[in-house]
Length: 159
View 1: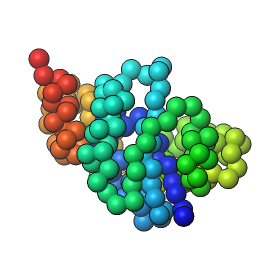
View 2: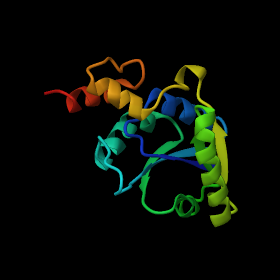
View 3: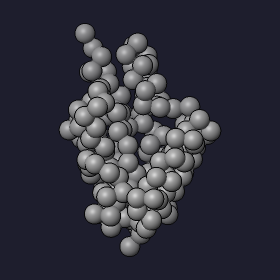
């Protein structure tokens, strides 16, 4: 079985993330959307909330599983018997950081490949950070995120 990990903070999950999941599903038998737990970051949504939002969105897609992980991504990939890590690239500005991470992961675990996938052009500008900023300022984010996420953002930034 060809299994891939699609890691991220998913704070929150966007339509760009969903697009990358769909692309990865065409290449792998199973895609594990893995939420990173990072104590150094201050996410808008708690780990439990992010897992719940992912379950409501990508969790309904065949051959997609939601998981969480702590520690090194490549160790998690080995535990899950995954042979690839999926990373989304929106722009050239993403590439340098992602390239460094891919090379380091290869050094740590040579049996896990990194696959870069580009989302549809309409999502290349989209980021969780921008979506949160639009929602915080009272803007409509419904074109950028699945409806459960838009609703959750609305609740976070109300009064």
